Amino acid sequence: MNYFSISRIISQIIFLSTHLMKAFFAHHKVDNPVNKRKKIKHRRDCAIIITHFRRLSMKKILILNGSFRKGNTDKTLVPVREALSEKETEIREFMIRDLIDTRCYGCALAITKGKEFCPTYETEKELLRQLEWCDALIIASPVYNGRETFIIKAMFDKFAFLVHRPRFFNKKAMVIVTRGNMFSAAIKYISKTLSQWGFHVTVKCGEPELPVLKNHLVPKTVQKIRNKTNRFYHSLDSAGKTPGIGDKLWFEVWKLNAEMGEKGNKTDFNYWKENGWFESDYYYDTRINPVSRLISSILRPVIKGQMKKTFKGY
Ligand SMILES: Cc1cc2nc3c(=O)[nH]c(=O)nc-3n(C[C@H](O)[C@H](O)[C@H](O)COP(=O)(O)O)c2cc1C
Picture 1 (cartoon, protein in one colour):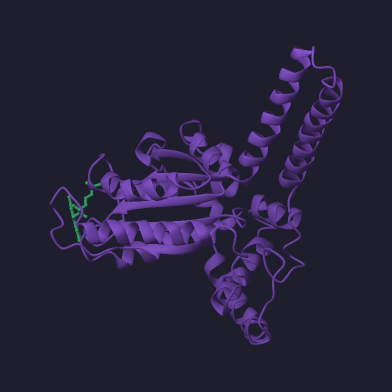
Picture 2 (cartoon, helix red, strand yellow):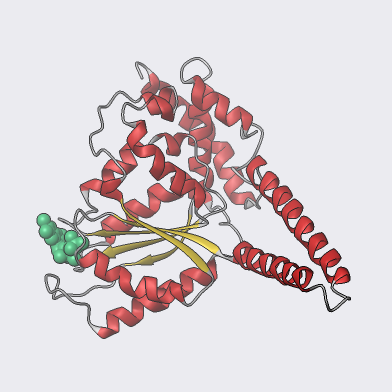
């Protein structure tokens, strides 16, 4: 639990207790049936409390469409929206193309100095704000030449600092790639990058549909997408990911990278230090399998040696 979630909980408690007290006192004052205004106020305060409780349980879902046009990927999202509209959700949806400048100038300033130093930060800060806002992310891309779109790749390049300094550990993600049947590389790459940012990718959806260039989805595919969306929604309250050996090893790689940053990339070093990750086994409290722990402690010096060679001139 970080500073923001604690302050959010405290402000919710203050908000709710104020309205509970108001409702309580108003209720006592309406014992006198002639006091109609007080009665209305009492009802209004009760309604505020009920709405607020509903909002608290609502999942905030961000849907990002990585296509350049509102075409087939947008249509693929129809059953997703339909399934979610039956649940307690607050949905925000964007075309990624509207929130980023797809040119990366290669200065790496977002990585080395901080996100605000990216020359196009002003364009992308809203997208970052939306990622911070959501409880869960649904990202969809068409498959072009066996991969995700250049828009999604551009977003990953722009936000490469999130791989160095991950943060979305309490959030879940669903990856959708449409629409032929050569989408596994795109799904794999998108899922891997989101995991590196901290997301727990609980559902991957690449429903093969061979009449790829037709403008509609067959009913069977629509049903499958709805089912996967329902599964994703139910995964939102599940526990965080238990890291496997691969996750643990990547954690050690990025820890070494940040450690070396003490003399170079101070931004990574400071971020890791603030989060206490130099002293911890993983990004968050979790059970690390003893075999993973053993293997990673054996491999750590080997990885360090390799990285030292790579770091020359970095
Ligand atoms: C340039 C281009 C390359 C494509 N490459 C593939 C591909 O490698 N595999 C595949 O199954 N479909 C491929 N398709 C089909 C698209 O994935 C499919 O039409 C998709 O639904 C388009 O989504 P959109 O309308 O949101 O852009 C390609 C389409 C285009 C325009």
